Length: 234
Image (tube, rainbow, N blue to C red):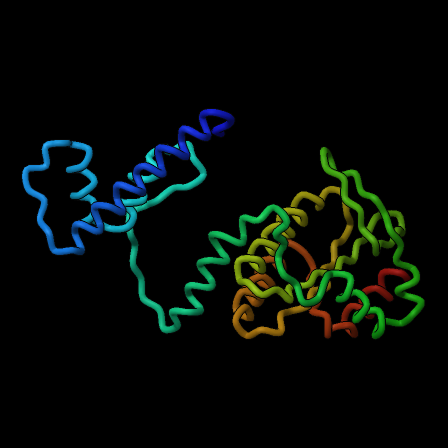
């Protein structure tokens, strides 16, 4: 962190380096050749003009403790340059915003509304909120049933726009399911998939991951969920 006078010093140093690089670029592009550069600093800057953009940026931002860093130039191949650039910008820039959240078209609560419309009314009414103290962690579940032991039904929306968000959410709930095993009799996850084909593969992988740890129902499988809940409550 740079504050006060130090911040001003850093700004002035960077500005002088930018000015020098700009001047050398003008010399280079004008077709002139600089010979016998006796000043090592100028010589180093001029040689950098023949290097890549990353090397030039590292001269402008030499302090590795600053927020701005420049790596070596990297390359790749893509069939859609615009889409790839948008994805990279979202991954490395906008994803760092402090108020960033996974962008969901349907929230978890929306999934539950869809499911309850197709469940028998008496079943949905029997599911009540409960707070679970699980070791050092506390969980609040909105849809639970007590019959001597605790049973939880939890809606999850995977209607996300990014494969990384789908993967992250599935792994997070895999961890929750494993941690909660000693504290719950059953954990039933009611999941809704994405509308976008771009993340459909990640969603199917998420189902496979979660199914290894707990009971999973897709949102359109309300008949199976209703049957299991009726058997539980009978």
